[in-house]
Image 1 (cartoon, rainbow, N blue to C red):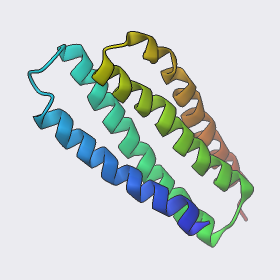
Image 2 (image 1 turned 90 degrees about the vertical axis):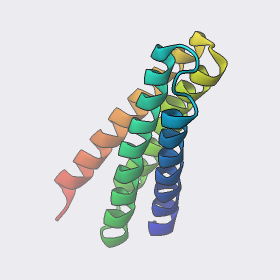
Image 3 (image 1 turned 30 degrees about the vertical axis):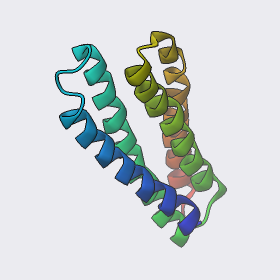
Image 4 (image 1 turned 180 degrees about the horizontal axis):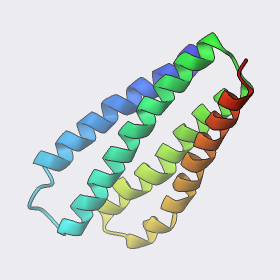
Length: 123
């Protein structure tokens, strides 16, 4: 469980830092300012959930739980759908990609709920 959740969390954190730096330096002053805000939102939410994924991996290594595993994979899916769609929208300018973003948001919310339920069942 530790490797299955911790590794994707750590890689997602690294990608988030790289994306944040790219957005701050390479995208600044290029394109629509609103799209830069969208890109920054994607990087920020990716980092939040990378940290959550690392935490879930560490917790699950000590107290294995199917709910924790589900929470972790929902954070991964949320990152792909939420942040991924916002990154893609920034680079392509195709605003219709924003229709995918709420799927990621629902995955994030469901992941947090799974984490809360797992915590409530912990002994």
